[in-house]
Image (cartoon, rainbow, N blue to C red; front, side, top):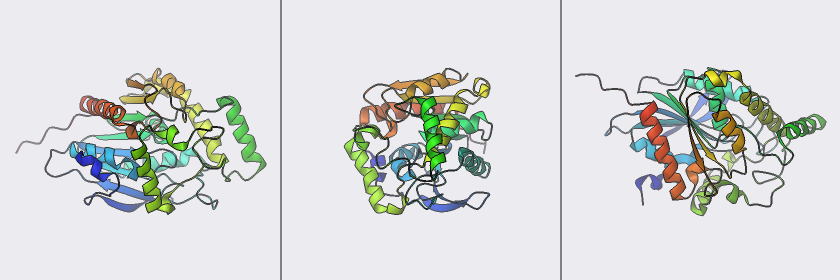
Amino acid sequence: MAAHALYRRAIPSAATITRWLAPDGWVHRRFDWPAPTHVRPRGTMLFQGGRGDVFEKYLEAFAHWHMRGWTIASFDWRGQGGSGRCTPAGDCGHIDRFDQYIDDLAAFWAGWDATAGPRVIVGHSMGGHLALRAVVERRIDPAACILIAPMLGLRSPIGSRVGEAAARMMAAIGRPTRPAWRGNERPYTARSRESLLTHDPARYADEVWWQGANPANRTGPPSWQWMVEAFRSTRELRTDPALSTTSTPVQMLVADADALVDPQAALTVAGKLPHVELHRYGPESAHEILREADPVRARAIAAIDGFLEAQAPARQAAPA
């Protein structure tokens, strides 16, 4: 068993889970894992997960980069995981405006240590959308930005334009904070949640284990207002003229068979970025590329490592 696999259901002893306060006082759950002292420091990496995610799901990937000398940080998004709820509706994931996510990310970035080598950001799904938005809007300045199955368009059986109109109508005729559906990751499908996320039963079981270990951190369906904002924010980002003038190197990993986010939207955005490296995966990958079966996951990790070596090289040690 690879050493990093040992961390799939255990918080590393050298890591800390603390609280970070946003400028408005909102309490976020935060993860920090300093680079090991026995390897040359590589830089600092902020990893941000998707809707409903918690950072524990990615400990295996964190361990890989940690062993390569990266200091790792992450925090649960406002309104989900261990960062509290924005609505009293049980475990519903709600946000009034996606701009609140961006403000949180920018504030965290501004207060984050920038002395230990290059700073990079890795975002999965919704985290990828928010990372790219923050880069395009020049709210953060990473040396490299890595987007994994980024949410740059939503899957909708009635199309994004009609889907957004329907979400706005549903938010207007009732409480916009109420859950948009029950269970699963996507309504109107008979497919299991597991099949939407990964082909690896053991890694899916890890998430279920963490939900049992910390039930208060589980996030269920999104609210109708979250849906409205997701449609709006992704639409506006796809058409933002600033995409074509973004100087940050971007790597995008896209699963063509993704049933949760729209891979074609991601490909469209990639075509507008001047400094982009695109990697595509076929039916062998579902939405969670970093938590897929070993062949897919290994290919993705290798691609990310290569991109980081090229775009965010380690700083030279100061002369003695």
